[in-house]
Image (spheres, rainbow, N blue to C red):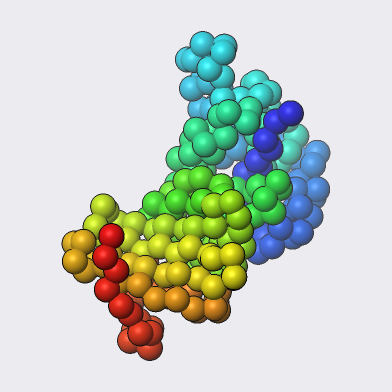
Length: 214
C-alpha cells in the first residue's frame, strides 16, 4: 500500500470535497507546466537514490493528462521525507497539498513560514489560520499535541487532555518566561495560536496565565 498525496493550485478549492471535484475536472487535460517542473525534480531526486531508498511508490511521477494536478504515491516509511520535499517544491509555485487519508487540504494562501509539529501527522513547514482551526479541533489520541515555534525558547503549544480540555502553553524567550492555561474551547485555542504566530497578542490579555515550571 502507498500513502497518496495530490498537488493542486492554491485557491482552486477551500474544502476537501471541492478539491476532489477539481481533481475530477482536471482529468484528461494536458499536464500544466508547473506540474511538469515539479514532477521532473521529484523524479531527478528520486533517481539519485539507491532503489531501496526510493521515496516514490510509483516512479516516475507526472507525464499524464492530469491538468494542473499531480498525484504522488509515497511508501509509508517515506511519508515525512516525501511530503517535506513536496512542500519544498510546491509552495514556491503556489501549489497546495491534498491529503485524502487525513482529509486535509493544506493550502499556502496566507501562510506563515513557521515550523509546526503535529503529534498525529508529523512536521509541516507553515501555518495558516484555517489549518490552526482544523488541527486544534481535530487533535486526538495517541499524540494530541500541536507545537508552533520560532526557536528553542520561543514557541506555543497545546495538548488535548482525555477530558477534552486543552492545555495551552507558550515560552517567551527563556525558561522562566514559560506560561500556561487551560480551556475547553478549541476555537479560542486556535485563535490564540494564530495570534501568537502573527505576533498579535491582544487575545492573550483576556486569558489568565500562570508560570509553568518544567
